[in-house]
Length: 126
Image 1 (tube, rainbow, N blue to C red):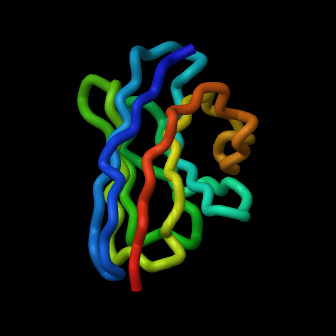
Image 2: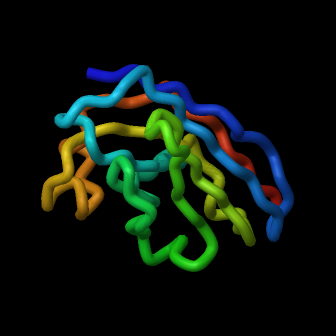
């Protein structure tokens, strides 16, 4: 189990950018895959982006591909989500999650990520 703390959320106008950060308390083999999810009021939680620890190749939801970029620092303890060209529909609580690299995790199955942060709110005004 790892503890995750997100930051970087805020309010921005449509077309703007934000960068979210997720700091994890450590690294274990069972938590070698990191994901960003979001949940808007009244909607289901959806996967946005994910990356393997130590990898530079991210996996993205179709709705954000080309506008969002997931990355991590060299210590593998901080994962970032750079969000550009934000749209109003991106408004949601954004969560960082940690799990194991599995087919389910690759498909953004939230059940494949046992550890979650408390979330950071992103609000995009049109």
